[in-house]
Amino acid sequence: MGHGPVRVAFRLLTKLTPGGPQTGRARAEARHGIFRAPAAGRRPQDPGLGVPPSFRVPGGQYRQQAEAAEERGDAAVTTELMARARTGDGEAFRELIGPHRRELMVHCYRILGSTQDAEDALQETMLAAWQGLHGFGERSSVRTWLYRIATNRCLNALRSGSRRPGTGTPPPAVAPLEPTGLAEVTWLEPLPDDLVEGLADRAPGPETRYETREAISLAFVTALQLLPPRQRAVLILRDVLGFRAREVAGMLESTEESVTSALKRARAAMGSRFGPAGQQEPPPPPGSPAEQHLVARLTQAFERGAIDDMVALLTEDVLLSMPPLPLEYQGRELARQFFTAMWHNRSYRLVPTRANGQPAFAVYVRDPLAGVAHASGLLVASLSGPRICTLTRFDNSVLPGFGLPRTLPD
Image (cartoon, rainbow, N blue to C red; front, side):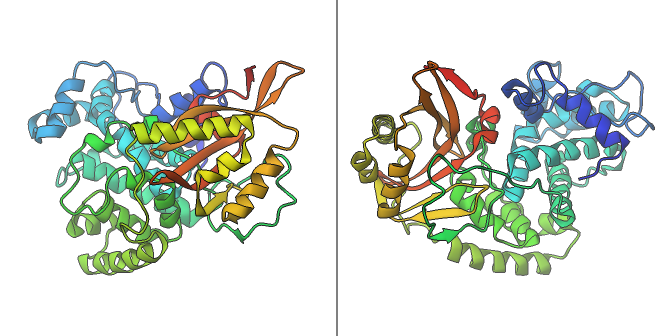
């Protein structure tokens, strides 16, 4: 993505927060998009303005009106906010855009597969929307307009090859094990569940084929990354978000016939990679007694180093992966070797969290001499009925996004 003067100033305003950019607070603030408001009376296209106002949703005179307008299609409120924003009213712009920020972040994440890249795309989307207010012709809804901007910013990022290079380290003592395969998607990152709270409450579009929970799972996002970028965008816009072919064609400056053709190819590819519904036993509902029971058993087995108990929780074809490293291990026997190597002369502590709508755990290695536990990555568990079908291990770089520390008193 670009690094011109406006971009640099924009990133400084959004990233330089107390505690530095690597703190959990700073990452959360950047993710929620804290921007400075423009000077009173400045027009959005004035030279040198370049930065949109704060997008924190809480508070503000017009927030309830904006949310109500989104629910009932109140064009009068939207028109009023748009008119105020075009005069340089930062508060009005914030209230106009704020209700869409969370879903746009998730949309960018689905296309890019990386929370960091998605944050960058969201920042550029907000900046482009602020600078393009006078170009919005109101032929579509604000939401559709924003999705058009966000989708094209993501596609531009993929074309430019600006994805961050992946770096990572394997967990202790795993390197000597021979993997069964090499993963194609090494840039994948987990999505904290706080970013998808409330999205399931939104009524899906008439064209949707996937439920919200399924469409944020690691398996689904991984399968999306293997599609060509344009097919990926079309499938997300049509089958996940429910936009009509005519709307998607407008977003991509294409024809309905081209969109329909791309969607047909994308559905065929997803069917072979992600698998048809019902191919495996569905996971228990989030927070259900069944899920809680499985999480408790996993935590106890992991912290006790009980290899047999841990393996008993896995499906026969369980897959272990560890992006950004391309290593994959499939099957219970390799999983047993993996855990045996991990637990050799080590003990662990797990801190539960959630990612991609799935149970997740920050892993800490206990240091009894120092009385602390050191972070050793994040595990995300994909469930199939009462068992774990996939364990994805991410390195420590993802922990700040979950507000998790590098060390814990133990």
